[in-house]
Amino acid sequence: MIEFHSSPNPTIGVEIELQLIDDTTLDLKNISSKVLANIDKKFCNRMKYELFESMIEINTDICSTIEEVDCDIKQTLRHLEEVLKNYNASVNCSSLHPFAIGKNQIISNDTRYKRIMNDLQIIGTRFITQGLHVHIGIDECEKVIKVNNALRIYLPLLLALSTSSPFYEGEDTGLYSYRTKIFESLPLAGMPDYLNSWNHFTNITENLIKANVIKSVKDLWWEVRPHPGFGTVEIRICDIPVNLIQILALVALMQALVVTIQNLDKYPDTHIQILESNKWQAVRYGLEGTFIDPLTLKQLPIKKAIEDLCNLIEPAMVSLGSAKYVKVIEEILIYGTGASQKRDIFKKSGKFEYMIQSMKERFYQ
Image (cartoon, rainbow, N blue to C red):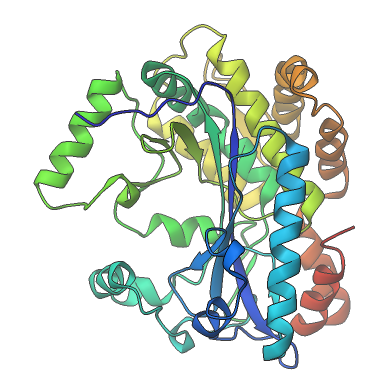
């Protein structure tokens, strides 16, 4: 039986996959192994390889508040940015580079990644995506199942708030989050099924391991999943918001949502087709999409569904000390996400390089 290492408090862990780009060409740069060999030892647990040499993942320590998350991310990013100066490179916070070519990327020298790429073939070469993964601590295994089931309903709203990947290999895809569609092409990825209990989850996982379909829970690329080793629920559906304050607001929203869900009645087993329809609306139309209420089956604008969500979780945000981030969510609803901002800048300039530089300058604003 897989053991759930419970977290007594709604702790926070954040993982951000970052692009490494050349400061001259603004294209992806395959240098992660060199960079990671030169980071200070105290950051060794906070930066690691990703699938390609043109990516690095940073992760926070276990945090209790959004302020701790903010300080942690800034500290890591500042050190990484200093090291990257030696390579005429910098980080880019976005879920897809707009013109980089997948087949030009070098696979990281990691046994697991090489095994995955050997399995994925051409699908793997397209997988030049970056995501935001957020862990929220939960104190009991049956609670994590309840939360995992309920979060499936809200995943499309979290995605709609974070979209930042409209371009791929030099083309406008017509989507707000093309990263999501690339990710869906992976085996065992996407929206998870309803889980009846902790035993149900562990039986599924153990059977997949016995059948040699996966090696561990890490190979379940669900858009939300229990994480037994950390004692968390891990929310994995989001694109990366294009500036830090929006990342923090989204993390604050997730923490408050997890806390809120634990105190509500059990959520119904919403049919997967309704969940997938809502996700498609977020992928294709972003904040301008429609959302099917899983209880009433009535359509409403995604923006209205997000407003309702903010009202639902605001008491939890107040108790957690993160209520100020509601205003940031409201600003996203007014001014749009990174995807719409990128389109606006590219439409005016006609140059991806100018768009990348403009978005980079806004990251700490």
